[in-house]
Image (cartoon, rainbow, N blue to C red; front, top):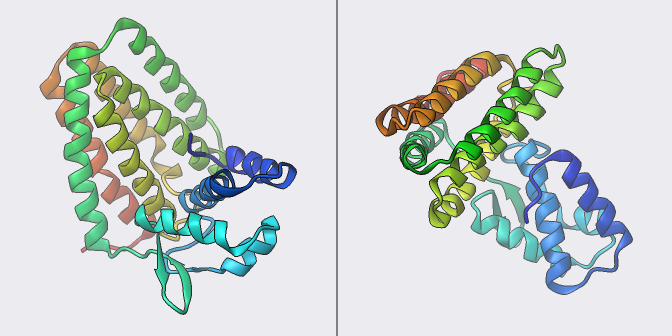
Length: 243
């Protein structure tokens, strides 16, 4: 299981320091740690990741670090430059917009299927997650709001993926969500999406109610609007136009 939040990333670092991992397990642990850092914005777009620094930080050889970076390269999160090193991928504003347009259509399809296949128990789970987001909105700490929303937003959408009862949809979507978190957190925005929580939660409620009503068309439209709307949020928080 990949690590998807800061606390989990810290735990992985502690585990790596305490346990004598080797081979594929060591490479996998490093992959999870670096991936978490990328999705949390620890590294900025275009920033170099120094292999020697990572190697020294965890007291490992160069090989498992490179193995982890090659996996991240296949995820399109980093770029390995021959004879130079590794750098965080930088996507243009147009590429970001293209991604969310594509992503919105895909997530809309999942939401439509979820509306047809969901169970009452799964709706209860989504309502519980939404309650946690309500708690974030009440917080005045932008760091808590930004990080908490990333975690609970993934929980919300993962719960909807489960409603679709489709492994291929869920697994494909997970990779797209990883890229989405990466794009949001490498924009250079401090505490991204923290200012947009009320609107994002409003979107979540529209999606949930459409699924509750088993209205596949409304669920598709609400989800697609929510995902594509991320472009405007990034633009507004960054203070620049995506064009």
